[in-house]
Amino acid sequence: MTSVAQPERSATRRRLLVLLPLALFLALAALFFVSLGGDRSRIPSALIGRPAPATVLPPVPGLERDGKPLPGLVPADFQGAVTLVNVWASWCVPCHDEAPLLMRLAEDTRIRIVGINYKDQPENARRFLGRYGNPFVAAGADASGRSSIDWGVYGVPETFIVGRDGRIAYKLVGPITAQNLETAVKPAIEQALAAK
Image 1 (cartoon, rainbow, N blue to C red):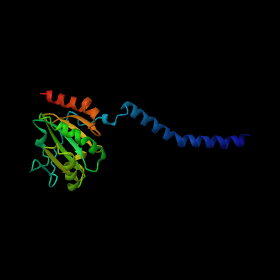
Image 2 (image 1 turned 90 degrees about the horizontal axis):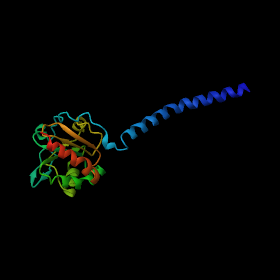
Image 3 (image 1 turned 30 degrees about the vertical axis):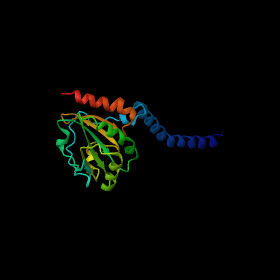
Image 4 (image 1 turned 60 degrees about the horizontal axis):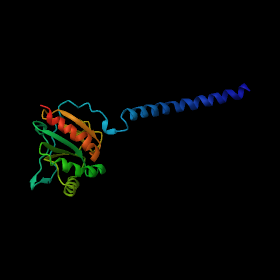
């Protein structure tokens, strides 16, 4: 009897040892998900309250607005005005959904909207903005993705609000939606505008 029970216990113990890491991972993942409320846009950014990265990006080749070439990005773009920075790409499906909302935000003359075009082909970026409209006063081509890494970007789209003092005031991971536009993005813009 003991000779049969011993291998069964041994096999059960091995199964438990194999399943234990998986169970721990799932428990930690569930805890992380619950603590965020299931909302990945609430992933905190270490950059909040810090100066915007010193971003220097060339313009997206051939991109125009009102018949004039659109400039790239320089650090001065993040000083003196409340600036919404949108990291986008033509190949990004959620970027297509948020494009009309960016155009709505561009109607607010109290803010500047600039873009970081992430790992995109210039002709595709031009076609994208030709289709949806161009909300940007400046747009830099981040062909390598290095500048986006400096901003702490997890993936496109992401949106940042930079205060007049050049410090990052807010970060949204994921697309701007009709709901978070009203509940998060616009309140963050108003707060940045109210700051001295």
